[in-house]
Image (cartoon, rainbow, N blue to C red; front, side, top):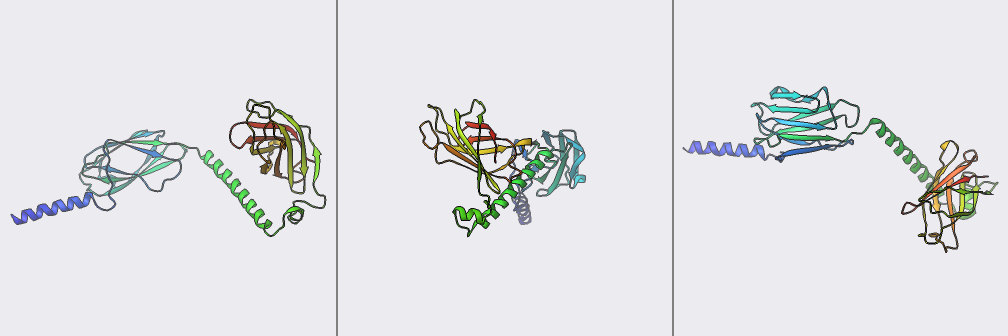
Length: 306
């Protein structure tokens, strides 16, 4: 009798240790939903399976490639059925609670993610009979474009960082401009502009009073004086874009004004500064400006530099 009690306690202890062992997965009842992001995840999802209990995977936004399912220990599964968007697994009696099997599925198209990896953990209850796998597709071309854009921004940050480093120890004012070689012996030359505002539903511009274009050795500046019609909220520039011939855009360094421009503002000037050599500053440019907060924009043509 004592031996039977000890055997029962040992079996109970072993079973409990298998289910609640360190690293075991809490099983979820009902339908399990998995989201596949184009960006790689840090850890693979873990699902519960059970001996002689079928688990059905339904894939949304993806079709499985032919021969695109790799399952560790597949010989210990009684059934592995694969169609275009459905995968049905049924472990055999040979699997033991606590065992983990790695499964990788590959998709038919070239969009990202191209594959997905899951851990299948054997649980006595096997509480995951239906799993919905939703794939958020993204083309390789869009990812490559994002990488290129990030590389451009990173290059610009490096250039700006080098510029700031070189500016350390250089005095302000005209000496600083000469020492940093922004201005050379030719100084800053200017030209008065004949500007035209393009009509737009969101155009906050009523009339261009006057404008000037300035050029130094490596910089150009557009100075605008604008009128905001009575009744409109004051306008403050937030971003700007200078686009020249062939849709070539200059790198805008800053947009600045003394304060919000309204109908009664005395100083209505706005300055836009960009990097450009004499060759890059040739031609006629279109200037687009957007307010700091909101949708109102100003677009003017006829911008040029001496």
